[in-house]
Image 1 (cartoon, rainbow, N blue to C red):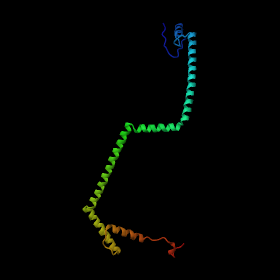
Image 2: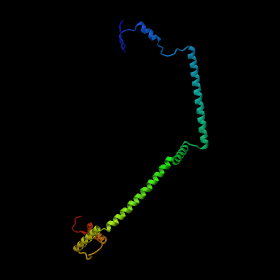
Image 3: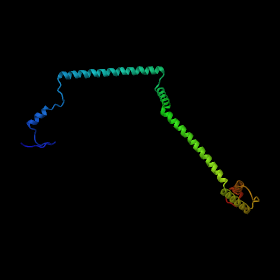
Image 4: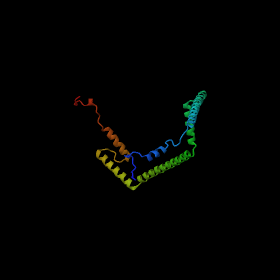
Length: 190
């Protein structure tokens, strides 16, 4: 007997045994009689008619609902607003929202306390720094330098506080600022 390889593109023609095998295969998996076929068609027609009836009833009920809503003054916008309000209320009364709110409140209080403590600590440090011997030494050096500069510039006031020196320097610089009035200079071309 001859062995044959099975493949997609067999070059040999089908033999009688192969034809018998193919004829035994039923593609519908069940053989249906004409009566069964007619029965199924009737059932299908009945289902399609019921679906059509249900669609008509649903459309009628939806129209009735719309009419009742209109009589009550319920518009889609007011309904949306009510749904939003109800949802917001439900969210605010939820356990998760309450816990989150409490946590954020506590965090805010702790942050405020921390900034307050930090501010007072910085104020205290600046006070300590201003009272420190090195700052006082620096302040004395600045005052003596300012006094020396005043003496050389010709100011009659030889001793003053740091703030006085700063304000007098500011006054002096504002008085020394030249004006740009062109009419005062006759030699300047127009």
